Image (cartoon, rainbow, N blue to C red; front, side, top):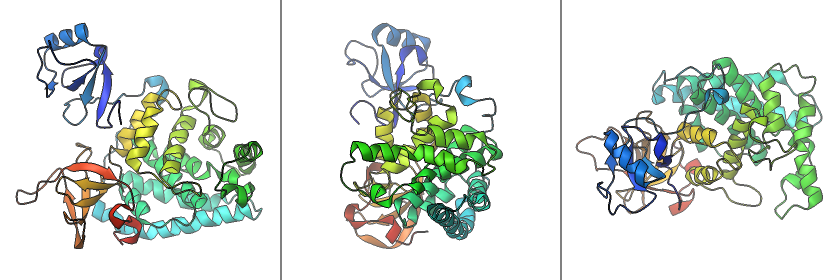
Length: 402
């Protein structure tokens, strides 16, 4: 990323506070009484110097001692966004349950979409049986379902996209502090975001070439078709309707179907737009290959305050972390690993599974490592960079990691 990295934040000098680690300026360091390698803000005098000579600085998220990511103003967060969740169980304890439930969820989602494509009504019982266990798992452990989900082979984009959107909505809602009932509504809305596509021809959805104007008009009609699916189903949560109706609206008014702008788009619609875009970018499509979660977050960050609300983008980044669960990474040791779960206190030091040796050869057995709590005898490991799925012939869905 040329302007800003995901492990740093551009901060206006008026928003600086003691405890932030300044590691880049909007000018060179010459003539200023600060070390070139950066420094921890501790005194008001340092703030005065920065305010005199700079408009903004770049703050290192990992080395700062106070929160840096922008919070949502009260008007954005909503009155119920209060709860601070923590994991109730260890990852290893939650995984067996998730593995069993994941297969059941796949079956239910497949049945919901097949019924609709066959002209039958939306089966709300199946929808609820699909989303409620996911939400309950996410409340127990934020990463367990994400970990199992990224390791499963996908059975087609529309089906996988519905499952992923539902899961991401639950995880994002948990991060935002919403109560369980609201998380269920968010997960339901995520599952049904593109439900209107079941009324569109498969030839259009699977088209590999550019869409004509007529194609695009038909494709965009999936929002209206989705609202028709919801009518008369008995869904009582207004959040579901909001998400389906507005997930393609954009912060600058460039979205559809109504060209809504900024706060005209309800909060859950703004959240849904980010979720939907992130999963689309990290999924293989008929017309392009997936990019890594890290790359997708970089691009979405670039779109902040244009296509998406900046504060929400930063909350989403904080939710998933710089290296989201399931990301393939190369370590300073030369080994390749995959991110298993986040360390809430130090997001740049997740729990990982090492897949290869330093020569990129698969290990005889994979090894779990907590980058935050590495043993004295361990090889010192840091994350050097993210890599794309398929690099060095590695595809997590083919390694039986779960």
